Image (cartoon, rainbow, N blue to C red; front, side, top):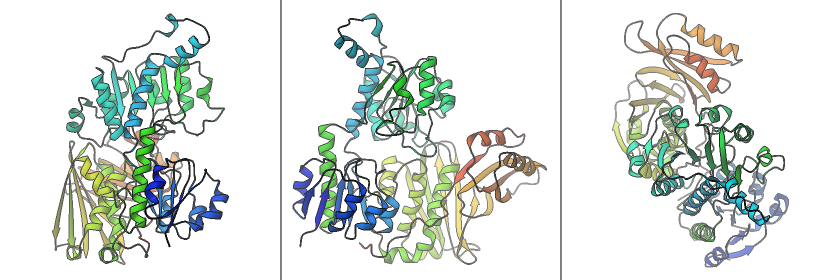
Length: 544
């Protein structure tokens, strides 16, 4: 009997034609959760766009489900954790709408600069107001791009071709990559904000980028700046943008994405007087893009149903049990070592060296390598997993070196990740201690014994009395509870540099970090997040 595939959300019919080679295909309109739950148990695969919500309840009812395909890039409407726990592969089309989104960004920028929407409305009202709609040329202006992924790179190329000066802020891209596109890399947002006439966002929404455009950052921008966001809603604080428009700090804005979609009728941006160009999330809405993503995802579903692999899985794919079993207790540790190493490093990665010691040298350590890459890359990228981490690392262009040594010192097995960037060399080591308890055992040159905790403060400081008390007082005054504190001293004599490491029950916000940095004798303060829960377990029934 042929497997069955359900396609919803008005996906191009070509998807059904491709899938009909291996399956029975049913097309239906977008269904609410309850109705979808009633029928989903009859299907082996599901293909959706953004309207259908593939929730935990839907997945629980999907007893036969092998794969869910999202005809697009984002998978925000799919419960990835539940899918992974149930062994359901989730695939998307990461490049199908790249050209469409980049073109829409340029179109919005030009429409905003030349007042096209407002002028169009005016002339249709029988008016002729040429002087009212005098625009701004983009030629010879400075465009600042936050992020330089696939879409951002296309936008930068187009802007350079139009004669714009382009600067890029992306702490994870090398200067060579930026200069190849004819742009310049700036090292900090402090340097970035004040030099841009136009700013465009090409970054995922993460903890670091949520409300990145806010009242504070808007006030640091060049007066009369113009903003474009075709990336993700929630990166721009919409109330702060409204205030910036009204004050004249922001001359205009163009938005394709919003914090709440469909847009809330009470959204403050709807109350501005024409300085904002808005479209209803049309970045990927071209006939060509919709055809590409439909074909891409349908082909992947077809291949999986035929017993082959998917090329763009966004959750944990097949991990062979024979490879995973000997090293599985180190998987979460490896991922967190990579995540920590990336958070303490600065600048674009040039080289990543992975060293495995002791008993780990006896096994195929490919899973550990992929876990490290997943940790390194997931600090600033969405949807990094065991399938795409090596691919993303290769595309990023940094060198990956592996070495093994049977000597592991006091530990049965240990892992060291050393990252070389434009700014320096950063290293983190981890091992299992006592009753197979994972610990970070070295950060750069400092020996530590650090648990895998969600919230960590790392504070290099001058080794002198009173430093711990001053930091503790700041945390206490901000109602931050300390779980654990240690001080790791380098090998130099007393009075040199030490590193204070604190785990807390809450996230440490930027304002608190800045207060800590102002303490005399403190060199820096970084808020680190790790993943203490074992997030890399593989369902037992997933095989190659």
